[in-house]
Amino acid sequence: MLIKMDIKPRQLEIIEVAGKLLTNSGINGLTIKNLANEMNFSEGAIYRHFKNKEEIILTLLRYLHENVQRIIGEIPKSGDFEKDFTSLFDRLACYFKENPHYVVAVFSEGLMDESVRVSEKIMLLIGTLMKQVQSVIKEAQEQQIITGSLASEQIAQIIIPSFRHQMFKWKMSNFKSDIEQDVASLTHTFIKLLKGTR
Image (cartoon, rainbow, N blue to C red; front, side, top):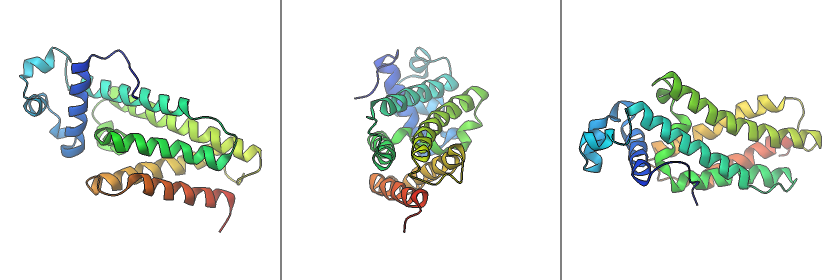
């Protein structure tokens, strides 16, 4: 179930279509005109819900961020490093598989160039993911389960870009590859590296 923020059904419909346009055509393909055509609306109908394109993107990112926070908040803390680490990425992969039109926000550097406010929202989303990964890593390091040769922040700075790259490869396959299996394989590889196992 998706989180319910202060957003009207029509606004949600608009940001979902905006996400699809971003994913299929990039930032230049997301225009009010294209959005209206895709939804069989007039441009005026779009403007009744959003002031401009930037506001649409910001709402999309806020909606995505709040859902990612919900996913993180719902993961039970087992104290088992492998289980907690795997569960985080399994649930994220499941969410994006069900909502592929939001995946562009995970890897698109081009989107970050749209405006300072958009860039800040994307960095906030990535920061939330970084913080959660750091938390799981730090706890495992304190228990001496995984390597302590790198700081938890440094490890997270390797893991999150790898996850984003996996999302990029999935998008480039036109969402035909098995993202859940690919992410599971990636997390398994990181676990082996962090534990120093063969």
